[in-house]
Length: 124
Image (cartoon, rainbow, N blue to C red):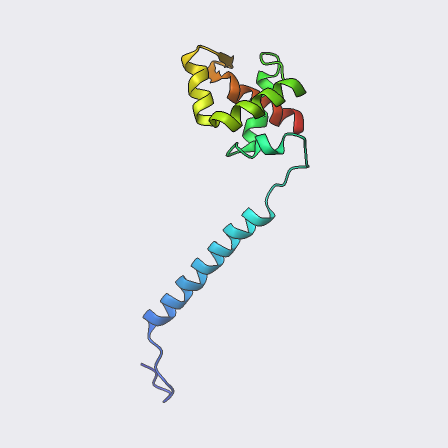
């Protein structure tokens, strides 16, 4: 209670206000990083690379897989056609079932995913 005769301000309301303001700032910072985060230069493969959840990580994998999976514009066109028909998940499962796999530093990747990663590396 305020002994100077002014209105009493509860500590709880100040604490709630500070916590609310902090949460608002955190949300704004998170959204700003999404809006103004890393942007990639335009490439001929943007429609394919949009399927990747993390293009930067895919580019790192693609650099390691570049010697295993040849990726030309013809491969990109075939991949684009297959992805329109089946989608990435179904295509990756079909690759795994058919034993179309690429080994990248001990990891086995479906060829379709490895090809996407190589395209990400080429356009990085």
